[in-house]
Each structure stands twice: as C-alpha cells, then as structure tokens.
Length: 247
Image (cartoon, rainbow, N blue to C red):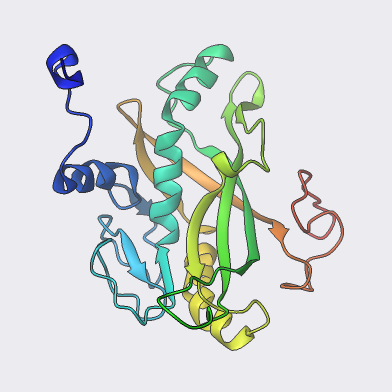
C-alpha cells in the first residue's frame, strides 16, 4: 500500500502546489502597514523576490540568466520573520504574565550581517569553472521587548542561538566581489535607504489576531571588518554581543 492510501496525503506534490505553498513562507505574503508611510517605498505589501539592480518584481521561475542580484524588500522580509515568531511572541507575553491583547509598541532589535560567501562558481559543461564570488546581506531578530505600565520594559523573546543559520534571514544575494564597492553600493543603496526610513516609522502587523505596532533598532554586529571599516570594536564580525558605545 502507498503512503497516500494509508495517510490520505500525497508526499510528492505537483510543482504548482509547491509554488503556492512556498508563497506563504516567503516575504510578500502577509499584509502590513507603516505609520507614517515609508519614504520612497511603495505601500504595496505583496512584494516577493525583486531584482537587486532594476528593482523589478520577479517570480522564482522567471529570472534572466544575467541577473546578478536577487533580494526581498527589507520591510517585507522583517514582516515574514516576525510572523515566523508569532507563537514565540504570544508565549512570551503569557510567560511574563502580560495581557495577550497588548498592542505595543514592541521594540525589535535586529542584528544585520553582510559578508562575502567566497567562490560559488559552478562548472557548466566542458571547460574550466568560471570563478564567481557572492555576497549575502541578512539579519537576525535578536530580541523583542514591550513596555508594561507596571514593570517598564519587559523582554518577551530572545534568540538563544544568534549565530545560527536557522535564525539568519537572507535579504539580498549578490554575485559580486566584496571588494567591488561600486556594485555593492548600487545594490545595497536602496536596501539601506529602506532601513533608514524604517527607523522613523512604526510597523502595524497582525499577530495572534490583534493588530500590534513594532519599532526596530538596527545593529551592524555581523558586518565583516574588511567590508565596512567604520564598524569597529565589539560591533563587528559575528559577535553575539552588541556594543552601544558609539551610538
């Protein structure tokens, strides 16, 4: 007897079914709002994978061969990461004896990382493999806290393994050398502009059936020293700690 006959479930799904399921897991699926709206960023929330250079929307299957960068819109990626932590947020409120209907604002500390991935070339057919360098920009939600009238600021979530790949959320992937500052600037420029705009706004997102507000604090603890020389001290390559001396 087959697995389907016993369980009633089809193990190997057709591609279109997988694509539909995938959409719910990728950024761009959940509706949200910014108050005030982000400057120079579209209010549309159903934005999935976009071309890192042109900014055009692309599906997973329709990427041109000459594309050198794919990314998510930064705010959509943050929303997707928060929805992944929906149960943790609700459990955190419960464990700290806080009202489950608290609307916030919740303060979210983000650790950003940007580092070269080395040679990622693949050999196609005959001949030598073409050397290809890649750079990845990603983030990790380090902790989430909320202000309570009785106890002040209460931390309801803290990432237990902040350097783990499991909690590291990719935002942008570039086929470029980390020393190629012109290409990095062209691709990361819009992404950094989105981040700067988010610092001055509140995210409104439904968590546990209730619309709640979130504010973000961005830290550059994961930047590679060679990549960004200005980031020094503890706030550098892969540190678990967050240094605030320079703030």
